[in-house]
Length: 431
Image (cartoon, rainbow, N blue to C red; front, side, top):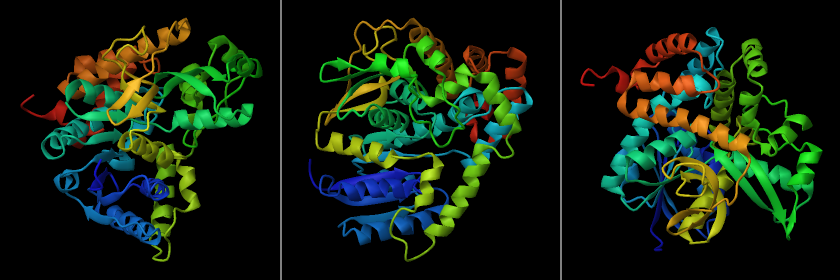
């Protein structure tokens, strides 16, 4: 590839952005970035975060032009890679997703249950618009999306647009890292099966030896994400499942306990994030600061620069490396449809991702759970794309964290009204 590498970050006012810049600096020899465009609709955050990013790049002697813009088309024009980390409605919308469901005895969470459903409703129309503009302005660019809910957004974009895209999450990377360290393994091969935020490690192999049995006997937990209160899984649960669940599975396996915790919590995670964000923005204002501050690690984005920028590196330099990504199944998991977005290991190179087939998979619990939640995700995409309230209700009835029609219907109506400004598919008169 040529050296006129242009990367656009959409949602660059996020306090996470210095993570990405750190990843680019670390790989500056492998990724000759000529132009970096930081785009956001929040002028204040873009200015504060953008200036820190400029100082970081300057301090690292990267010969890279940095442009700050509030204009999407300017950011996308001739981009090679587009990194998307948007939050439609910003953190106040997240707080509504977290608090309103609690009135109806439903879990309020950023990606799971009815809170995650509404995040998808707000985000998918905007992501489809970005994909549409990419077709016009940078048709060969790769879209790497880590806006949540990443799996559902992948499902929507790969089935409703022509964009070349991969969905990304830092959960698998952190799971692998913690298990490698606990079992003292250097280069294990993991079999990772699931949907985004609904996933399990089902095999751990190194030098011809299988370690998953050892892990199950230990009742091994992987590291929990910073952004979810975690109490872990007992040995009995892990042995019953027959695999190591990601920490997000606590919402499904311990639903009542999680609901109680959320109801008793003084602040929602979104409110805590608002506090951390303001603290970070104040730190970023320091004109002497030119490195990523330590406080950023408390936001739950640990290692996400490593995950995102190493993926860009693998595509750009045709590295044929194995990464966990969200992409269309295309036969990787025999029990899922080809058009289902799944989160699995894939070989990454200049043509994108080739999912690694999981042969003879026989964990029936995982198969059934994935099929059930995928049915929810399909209806969710239909509701987001078509503004169908029937599809929305069918989705919520399929979701294991919702399931009750009366609670779902009342909560849906309240959240729909609360998020009205960001739900054109439900409120446009022309619908």
